[in-house]
Length: 85
Image 1 (cartoon, rainbow, N blue to C red):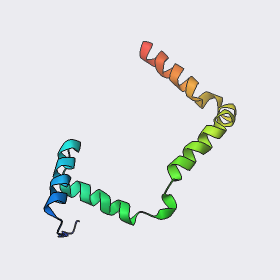
Image 2: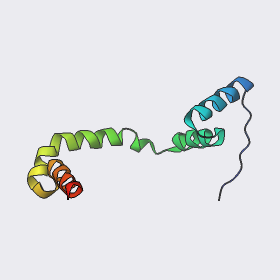
Image 3: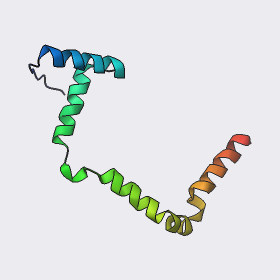
């Protein structure tokens, strides 16, 4: 369930929000809702995706060696073979 929230913004900001929403194929409400979500996001999550990608990149060879059937190159080859069949 959602709750209505009324805010007042300057006309210029509202126009910018409308332009951005149109450019992104969304609504002003969706833009503001996303901004609100970002404002209350747990700060411990900041940069977590970057740290995870770095970890995976540093350890990719070890993962591939430990799980050779699941290595990305094998998965790509299996997918291509499946499409060719």
